[in-house]
Image 1 (cartoon, helix red, strand yellow):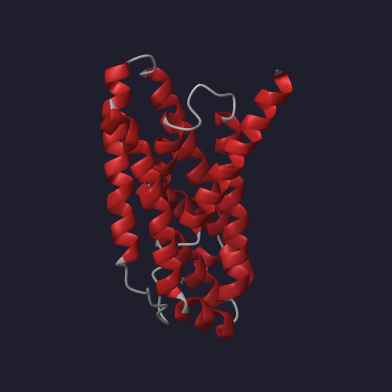
Image 2 (image 1 turned 90 degrees about the vertical axis):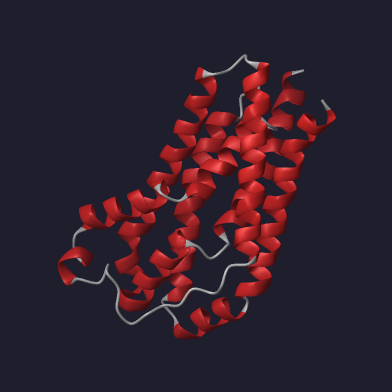
Length: 214
């Protein structure tokens, strides 16, 4: 019985990780910030922002879990939450599919030397950028109230969010530090956005399905 529960949790976490990877792979404020820093100052210059974004994303996931725990047990609230989260995910999916490719400018408000050399400021900037990005919160809300509800996988999912954000940030910094890879990344902006948007849209529909069938 315990083995079956462990297998189920592992499968749910794998699906969770794949879905969050689709979100991270979508060009947005987190990727643009890290890419800008890597393009302007190289891999090392982007490290504080990568760490700050990972910490911020982990905090968002943890806060979402605590919020849902505080209101657990209410069927009506769960249905409302599903409607809100499903609608938000669907809206975000449309926005991602229609998003234009961001541009890396030669100037950036993050490019002052004193800021680049200050890890505290770099981490803080990445942290607050992650906090103001609604996609992570919407995704975690949808997963914690849906597939991961009533399981012991939520703490691991929170850890996954921070870990994936950190590793993907490092990968983004490595890629965008090289002009050729920046060109490739922006050349495939449209198919990446379309794929990520469809993943999010399917998650939103699955979240709304119990409400429709109720």
